[in-house]
Length: 343
Image 1: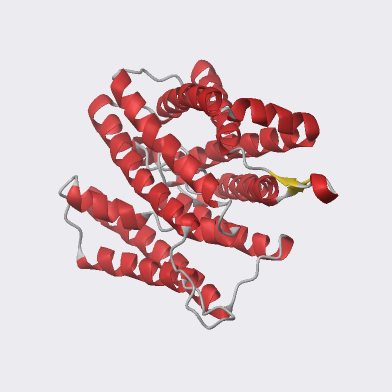
Image 2 (image 1 turned 30 degrees about the horizontal axis):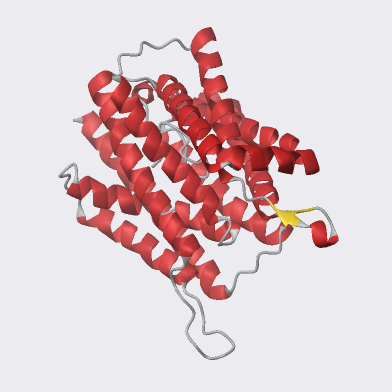
């Protein structure tokens, strides 16, 4: 993604560049397929976003019995189970891949992957959905920092400029005006800290996935299956030892409709991954990045319209700066790769 091989949280968590990009098909002769991929991605993730906000921000029950959904472990558990089933189905039918990845690599990657998902979902208990989407869109920031610190990578000046544009846009969006008492509001609360943690873990996961892909030739669906399978194991432990599993079952008994929402939410996530992979392998990562970046903007717009999440002019300007930076970063990265290929 800018997209990652495994759906880290599906608001960003999308499949990254694959070596199959070398077989990119000409766009002109595949216009219908491109429209199909773009519409599929938009519809799946639009529905995903609506359901995620409905589940985590909705009210359940009436009057004094009104309660909120606070079962992040259970929500991510269902999502990981569906992702693992989808990946295994594909591996067993039409996209077989050899797996020579050491168990410890899958184990470590699943921990950072799971941590990013949990932090991102838990952040919704403290911040609005547009804030979460925009915060997660700032993924190039930790990728750049971790690339310099851990991988000793060197980036051209323009890369820093585009990331700086994203940083300024995020800062403008998150900046809080003075409250009614005249005291300055806290810029970084619990929700923002959770988003920062999620972004950092996204960067760690991306680095581990790249290592798995380059050293062990791990395929995208093998990676998706193994990491989600390990995540399910970790979540089972978490649900048992925290007691959330039993609490969640009680919540489901009181509000059975939430199960359908969680299942369709997870299916939309897994199906969206299929469309993203199809886009990357058929049209390349740049086209995929444009589609997913545009989709995130409309997700924010839908949240404002359907869930009445207000945004002021400064936040809209910050949003525009973030997506401009993302677009430039995607186009710039692709341009450099093409130049290398020509050489």
